[in-house]
Length: 298
Length: 311
Image 1: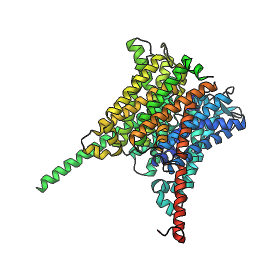
Image 2: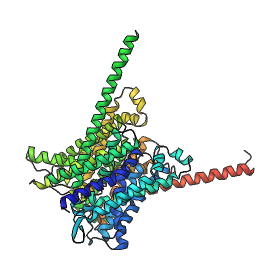
Image 3: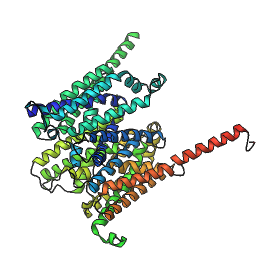
Image 4: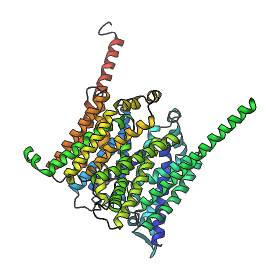
């Protein structure tokens, strides 16, 4: 497969794998948690490396996903103590874990090639470098198949747990009264999110994973009122934006994730301004109608 | 290393003074972000400081023709763009059905993504005095110069002076926004001013500790201070002291231990301070809560079994 085509496909698949679970995060008003989880990837990888001594090991992804889960569960626990307010718990946990990761890297593994910069910023072209060949024919980047597997896992999880996720998102008390174990559903969902963030950081970098996960669903949320529509729009925006962002980055010779983040941002701003204008128009229409009914009544 | 040796070394003194200033200002103003339940806004600001700094750098090089490393210019750029990012996030949350956390996430990614593209453009061009992204992500406390320190002190003092000058308005807007509107204070003007001071507090630290970890300087000291005090002046003062203390101890440890990065060590020191406060502060803490519950249970048991006092 052509290298550019393979990399573009990787961008699209990564964007879809991130954006689909992202819809429920936006609906749960938990968007900044993705930022917190993505920063925990670094210490997760460091600790995973400590046990495996192998930077290629798939166990590193599981270790990093567990670290993300520590952030999610830990900040939830801190919030439940009732001693803290607002979004402070997340802001407390992830810098501490991240700092521990940085200190571990400099103190213990200074000789290992674990580039903190690469973890944070990511490089799609580098992730797409290794090609998978079957019978002497290249069928695209190996990482494309990893992300396809994550996408399949996410689709399966969202499909199987759709009704449970829906009811725990919109009405957790009601879900509890139905006998659904809300805590279990939340933790399972957070683990899937954490796994997705970890798998995606190779391609997008830890800082901008949040762009892939939150901005397409947020834009779709502005424009839709029903969950199936929200999902469909999210998928369209994610895939289209991935291609456009890839092209921007290609033209500017910049990091793909940055191009994608900026393009998603532009789409969001356009969507936001569009809904604002629509709101204004409707207000004015209402006002005109109110005046005319008042006049006809008098 | 003896303390005398520590204080006679110019670099060590600069690192200590610089980080203590950052910790003090961020701790004091972080209290308001904490009480507004929007602590993570500092994370948005820190990320938006990247394009702000880069734009200021470009403007200085292209328009003024001066070297791009003027600290005051860079801070001004970061403050302006950081404030725009905050206003964007708060504005989107106020005027649409997007919730504030999502609005902050969107703002963060737009500005940071733009910063990364700008960085690429600068890296491709020929500009004197350009740096790598590494400098922005992790910062470097050991390159704080006298001029940097004076700039941080001045800008930080301006932010603190604004806070003291508008103390009443800030407090009213934080605790009773409706009442403050009824009294005729412009909510938007106060909010913009309050968030600008928080932006300043965040931005002056980015060079020394990096944009990834700056959020901890704004979030952790207030969260620790809140467990010890019930009044706003008490909280702001204590939070500033915690910030300064944590930064000082962390910076000292990183120098004494040798090859350990300063920013992360300060963050861990602050986190330890917070954990102690959360576990064992006499007024509100996990231990106090457990003790109170146990005492209440024992009292109830005594009452139900008819033993003890007949009251």
